[in-house]
Length: 182
Ligand code: FE
Image (cartoon, rainbow, N blue to C red; front, side):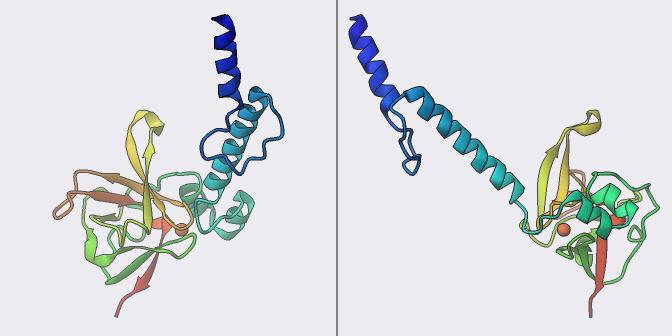
């Protein structure tokens, strides 16, 4: 009975894991293969997280390109002082861009006066242009809004916005650029 158990265990350990057929089988010992597979999967995951944005720069490159205030908000997820930003009360028609990479993120058509002191919108240009990420910092559970192209921090989204979405994208002026429309 004990022998059957040992044989079954050896057989199971010698089978290659699903989806890992391209992994060369170099050792007959199950444990070695298993750890090699885990390592390969971890390398893949780390590669993916590094390549998840189209625009990838080092912190040194961002620091060189951005002003200290832009760097603090876009790369360090900081927040500008309320009513201090140039787009809070900005009413021109046009497109708001990511100040780090120029990606178009919001339009003036969806901007509204939230009274909070930060430029506020009820909808991004598209769900691809921005990404929403869970943020558990500062003892709160919030949803962070980042640029879909470079990952730069733009602000947060809350569910107390106006119709038609009921959402309030609360952004930092310093993280935005503006292209005037016709
Ligand atoms: Fe960007």
